[in-house]
Image 1 (cartoon, helix red, strand yellow):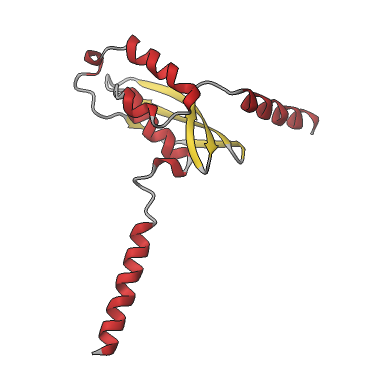
Image 2: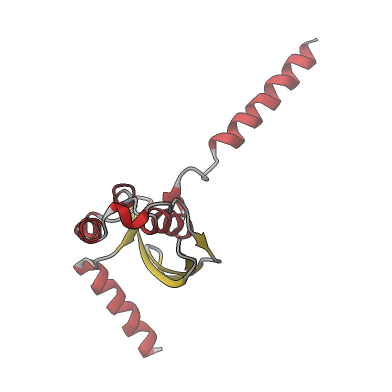
Length: 146
């Protein structure tokens, strides 16, 4: 009986540890997942949701989209199709994600999204900060000199 209880506790512990590490509901853990979450919300007109996936500097751009594209433009559009997302890491904290998005009207659109890592989480950036511009310039200089 004691062995049965021990075995049950071990199995329960393994199960709880396995499910607690599930990142499927956390889009901030990788460039691919944040890109997918952002594209799903942006291309379906869920601008308030899209704001949570971007850097603070990018929120004014989402606000512009929100005013430029009224909600009726997205009637009946509750999901999009996404092809394979390719990631090109520029540095440990910056990446460029590319994919083909199938819009609600059935048309394909090439999507290129820059993502940055801040405080251990990935975010989409639609506007570069000065430090990001400097970092990218330094990377380009390194590549040029090699």
